[in-house]
Structures are given as C-alpha cells and as structure tokens.
Amino acid sequence: TARRHAGKLERLEAPAELLGRVQLELERPVAAEEHRRERSQALRWSIVGLVAVLGIALGLRFGLREVNAAPTLTFQIQRVQNASELDGLARDLAGGLTGGWSEVTWGEPR
Image (cartoon, rainbow, N blue to C red; front, side):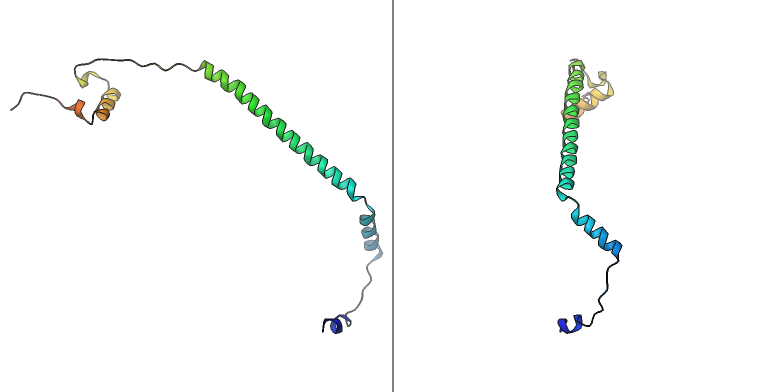
C-alpha cells in the first residue's frame, strides 16, 4: 500500500542554494570541529578546577587565621546562698537544670 501511494507523490527539486549549502557542510572537516569543542571543554574544566583549588586555599588561609585569632571561652564560678542573688539568665539556667528546685523558697512552717 505504501509503494502504491508513494509513487503518486510529486517529486520536487531542491533549490541550487540549498544543494550548495549541503555540499559545503558535507565537505567541512568534522574532526577540526570536534577537536575545537574538546579543547574548549578541557579549558573550561581546567579553569573550574583552578578556581576550586584557589577557593579552598584562600578559605584555609583566612579560615585558619580567624581560628587562631578567636577569643578563648571563659567561665566564672559563683557560689551563692540564695538563687535570688544571681542575675536573671543564671537564675533561669539553675532553675532549668534543677527542675525548679533552686527556685523553691524555704520559709517557716505554718
């Protein structure tokens, strides 16, 4: 069925300009194009690798400088008889750590 219908189709000629463009494309060296594409891709990856290495090196350089210059942590021990002698943050911390036991006030029994 396909042969019968394909035979009835009108055959058209391609314009001479199209034929010339197709021939030029076929004659063009494909290897040079592929080689150029591979070189540009290799160059791109080289630049990306160089930027990554420089970024890591600068991060380590300046990151270590900040670590060495970081202040040391200190703490202070205060002994108090009553939790009301502490400031608000220390009083809340003691209440949280003792389950509220430090906030209990002992008075005279009734």
